[in-house]
Image (cartoon, rainbow, N blue to C red; front, side, top):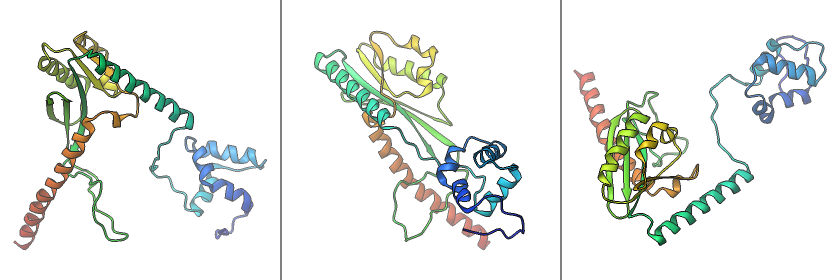
Length: 254
């Protein structure tokens, strides 16, 4: 462990410092301010005084910085088991509808977003090499699509920026017109705008909404279409950036 270089009297011993800078300790206090953390440390070790300035010095000494966190998401085993149960129930329900021919058509809808500077999911890199990416990735383009086994791509819309309940409502009305004369099940995920109250009037017995379980994008076959679309989009960006690079070189020469 490092020793103080500022000549100040050490307040915490080495074991206490190890606890203070441990990842588990930092994670458990991630929602607390420096002042609140200092109070916890003071009470835990029954110190006469321990200010947030002192805590800040300890953090600075051991390289702990106030940065945007890089999150990793997890769920408990109980939550995973519950999710698997919901997914199994959804699959049984859909198989039942198919066997009974409850609907003339099952339509899967979803939206995806592309940017001018799209991140690639996989590519060839030298060891330790990093890809440069602009902080501003360009204005986003949203695509909403609807597919079915019977008709393939039933309907889609493309528009700039993000989706919202009004745009999604207009999309549903246009899709409903495409399904006129057919009894259709509309399968969608649990995006907040999909639950907007104003949309409930769009659905009826011949245009019925079915919600996927949460975190179950793998049960929506349109995700495979988005994977292909984004792959083609990313490949096309190579030619766009190549032309931009040539233009910049020509301007610099001139």
